[in-house]
Length: 427
Ligand SMILES: [Zn+2]
Image 1: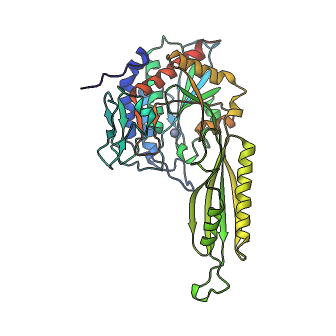
Image 2: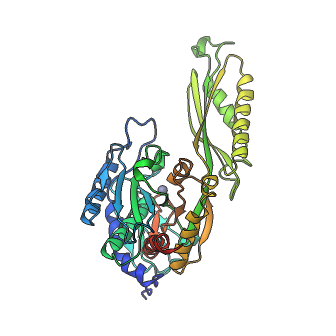
Image 3: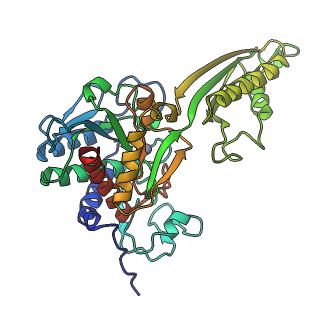
C-alpha cells in the first residue's frame, strides 16, 4: 500500500516544494566540507567556492545584478524593495555553504524517499538506517518526501537546506513584484562549521538593520538564544628521558594528561549528563607523548558567569593534577569562541517578533527555543547585526543519518516570503 502524500502547510509552500528540493539535491552534491585547524585562507577549503560561484551565477540569472563573491568567500546580493523608500528597511538573509568536518562529505548522492511510510529507512550504503523508533521527529513525518544521503556521507542539509530555501524564496519574490518586500540582502557564508562563518563577514558592506540565519531544524522553530562558548588548551611539558635511564627522572606528559582528564567530572558537567540550559566541559582532542601533551577542551553555558566558573574549575583541576607530578609544567590558554546572542537581541524585540509573526502567517505554531550550540548569528549579533535563527526542516546534522523533509523546507521558504511582507507592511 502506498502512503498518501502529506499536505503542505500552504498553497504557497506547495508551489515552492519542487524548487527547494531540486536546489538542495543539486547543492548537496558539491563537496563544501570545511577543515579545522589553523586557517591559511578563507574559506578553509576550495570546494566551498565551487558552490559560492554557482550561487552567484544563479542570483544573476534571477536578476540580482550585484551578486558577487568577496575576497574571503562570502556571497552577497541585493533584491530591491517593492515598497516605497519611506517604508523601506534593509533585512538580511544568511545561510552557510560549508558542511561539517565531523562526517564524510565527499561524493554525496542525495536520495528522495517519496511519501514516507513511517517505517525504517534503509540507506543503500554504510549499513545506515533511519529508525523512527529512535528518531521522534522522523516518526512525525509520515507522508513527507524525505531527503537523505546514500548512507556513507552526510547529506549537508546543514546548511544547504537553508541556502536552497533562501534561493527559492528569492526566486519567488523576484518573479512576483506585486508582493510587498523591503530591500533584502542575501549573504552565503563559508566556514560556519569551524566557527569562522561570521568572523570575516563584512557587516558594513552588508548594510542590513537585522538578519535571519536559516540554520535551524524542526519546523516552526525560532532560536534567539545560543551557548556562550570558550575553548581551553592545556599544554603539559614533561621530562623526557630514555626509559632505560629514567629512574627518578622521567616525567611522562602523556601520563599526566590522562590523570588530568580522569580528574574531570563524568557524572555532571559533561555533554552526556546535561540538557536544557545546563552547561558542560567537553574534551575534544588529546595529543601526547612523554615530552609533551595537549588537552583541548570546549566549555559551554547559556550564562556567562557560569561559563567563567566552568573555565576556572577546569583550570584549577589541571593545575592541581600537574602539581602532583614534580618536574611537569602546565601552560593554559583560554579563549572566547562565541557569545550567547540573547543579550544582543533583547534590545531589538521587533526582530524576533516579526519572525514569530511570519511563522504564524504560514499557519504554524511558533516554537521559541535555545540552541545548545552557536550559529553565525551568535557572533553577528554581538558585532551589532541582530541575527536570530529560523528552522530549515533538516535533522540529525553532522552525521550519515542526516535527513530533511521537503514539505518542511518548503514551509521554511514560505516563512521567508512572509517575513519580507512583515517588514514591508507592518508598522
Ligand atoms: Zn549549520
